Length: 262
Image 1 (cartoon, rainbow, N blue to C red):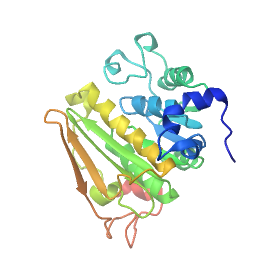
Image 2: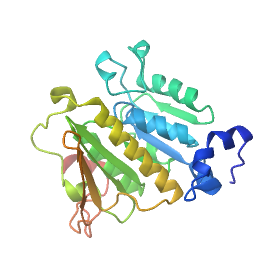
Image 3: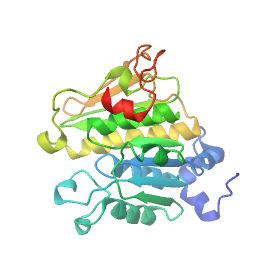
Image 4: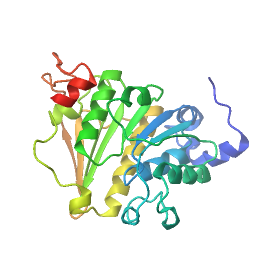
């Protein structure tokens, strides 16, 4: 379906349309995109802000938490007046203020084995904005099994990392075969500089827009890492693992129940 822009939309997206690599056709592709963002926290906040501003047609948000005071230094889509409010409600209100053209679909739940496939089936791209390993592996496995492209992201202290997966490229298990057997510290336990989440979320949102418009290469078959204390950014090339348990030549994970046990 061809998107016909109103004069208001042409003005709103004019700086995109002026870009030679995007133009009207690129903006049309963005404006037909459907993206599910898993988590409306530190990463989800800038991701949702930029995708809404860019005019993505449908933004799905899944999060089962409420806004807390300790969230506000990094979860910039939520304000002090939102404390105690559901994060999905708070995020939706801001998105509509940014861009009333965006269709916002909210899910008051946590991403889990039982709802994963049903949640991702209607979306073109999935974005991981979560902060725990088990959900990150679940997002990876569900997207691989459903052939859905996704962006992985993670932050801790002063560090961030991300990559993009499309069918045929390396996945999370190609790098980290299975969830760690020991407890790895989280942001709740060790802290995170708030702006680190902003930097990484902006990168993830950029990958989504590049995916829709076909602008240059994505962060596939590599891991982008950075440390803001040194301001050192490093792109580590990583080949797809032929022995990966889910996307390798002989996968042993063929459903999400198996993924829980490996």
